[in-house]
Length: 484
Image (cartoon, rainbow, N blue to C red; front, side, top):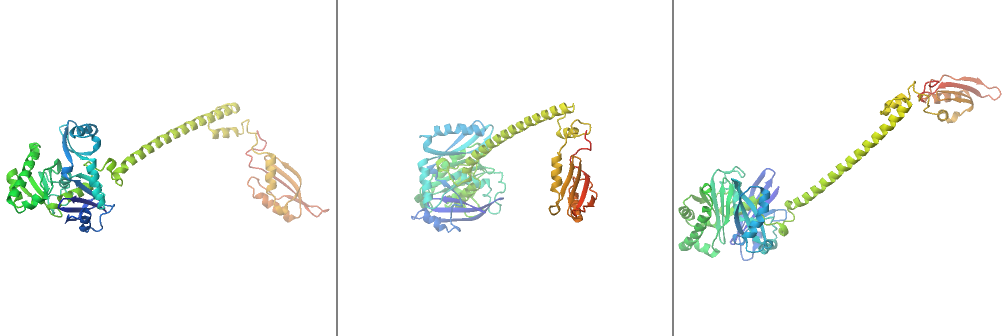
């Protein structure tokens, strides 16, 4: 199981949500938070008490503060993904007051309808991103995903995590249009969801931590805070069409803890307002849980870790290497196919040359052209063929085979030998009758020697030895007696 971590580093607290990811989805493992003190982020991470502690094997997602990121909603009159990638650099360059090389930008497609595409573009300066990553690195954290907080909140709606603890994560989102506002010290993020899909993601203006502390006890400070939020909420929601007007507003973060927040915002916006109900943790854990969900399915969403800031251990960085390896493999495959075709063509030419040679030989000897070598051999060895008389073995070969089968301990003295390729006649002298029997038994072991009958034997009175005479056929020459 792989642990996925959403880390929400706010001015007042550090909140974390961990998921266990598996083949069939994910399960929420833990949601917790600690106060951020003057000791910094490293001390807050240690105070979380995660078991095991955050390490390089964890997939960590974080969000940049809204004040550090510029967002632009671009509407393009087409839906082709390739054209979108080609046009967006010019759109981004025209929207920023400095050179494109000084920023890191990424985009997410929010909606496509009527031949048009709404694209959310996030832009951050390279120096700012470098400082943020250095701060996390000093705390022993290397986030794989650095995204926008509003898009992370939208992930809660996409995975149906805003319907309360009784609804299983990953169930189909309800067919309603809702807005979720996560507001607190130094941050306010808004996401508008249409049936779980984000159609608007925006960072709003907010107040300092001191103002939020005053708003908890001071009505005047609370009124000023709500007025700022209501103004930006109305402007943002009016920018969408009436068909995507929210049916309710969900509150997350510190804004839900302010006295009378739901009633006052509902009266100002003329829509139901309630606290966000999450499967685990309170409304203040919404962004941490949204970041964890975004890390669980990061494709197609904004991630500023690209180019020189890319997470080198991420599998997404392997895609470029895999693409190059795939191209190399394709080239090798094409070369291998070409080499195979060349060899096959060469073999075809050799076969044609051999067939032509066999045809010429059989036509010259037999009078007919034959390209099958088996048929040619059969015809050339036939009884009516002019080649039938050509022996396959010589008399010397037959004699060598005869001598080779003589037993070593009974080697006779050969007086007369008559060898042809079809018959053998042998006369000789052995030491005794037993030696003659040994010679007979040894010759019978050769399958090429025909039927070997008992030889004619006589006693030589002068020497006391035994003379013998063999007469048998040789069957391995492939010839008939007499030849052609």
